[in-house]
Image 1 (cartoon, helix red, strand yellow):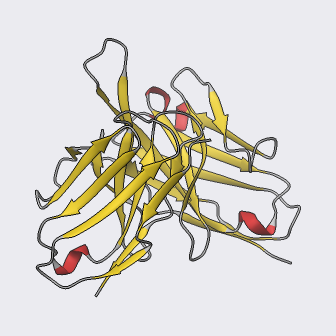
Image 2: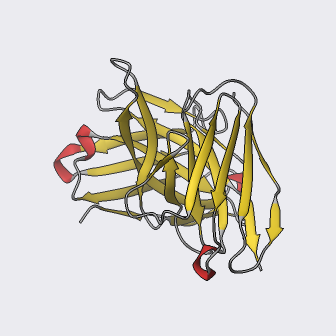
Length: 126
Length: 106
């Protein structure tokens, strides 16, 4: 069974740091495209970051320079290092695998997030 | 960034109703459009990808259509377990962006 399990959330003061983890089973993090998506209380979904198989990373403007996505291949685990946390970073953080399907045009694929963890809650408050 | 606009933000419906949710992209995203269902306290669940392809295990009462900037999610015959919030998401480019959601309630 393919499963993602997030951990590391908690209550942290503004300006603090947290490191989230996403332990994978049934899939290999290093050969997958993995994302973090967050959801503030009562709000919609917001994409945060992605790491490609080749290790290339991208971030939402709202977290760029403060958050770092990485992976530990030996532990088959995805991480999100969050620094300089702000009140508006308060959210449930989900990790998700990006699946793909060929479009029919060589080298082009449709992408979607087909496996999600249950999420871990981060609360930034003084 | 590509803005995704869903309508309506919420709707009231009854079991057995046909429900249609629309999603509009601020620029052409071709067929790079996905739909997710989220129930309270749960992670999102992929329903449809590539605008119209049903994810494995998703009931056939769900369908998607559209291309370019205008997309539709249809639930043919609403079931009790379909009361949830639905999100569209474009995967055309980074940053990935979601619509604001449509809450389907009784």
